[in-house]
Image 1 (cartoon, rainbow, N blue to C red):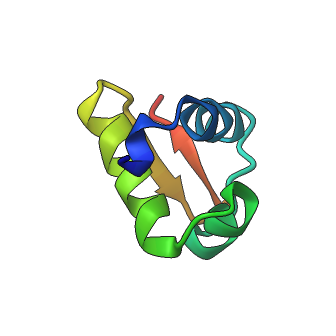
Image 2: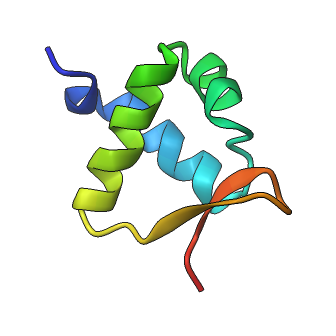
Length: 66
């Protein structure tokens, strides 16, 4: 099963993004219980699904584009 097929992980990632609480990519991986590479895969999947997100250095989190 692909990591992007896990609805719980996708839902948790979306929640963290909406609350500006992902942290760095390595912190996001720890919060999700996945590898850093899989965290990047999840983010790319969300971007490909229409989520307009970017990493904010100021907030140290992935956030929705304004």
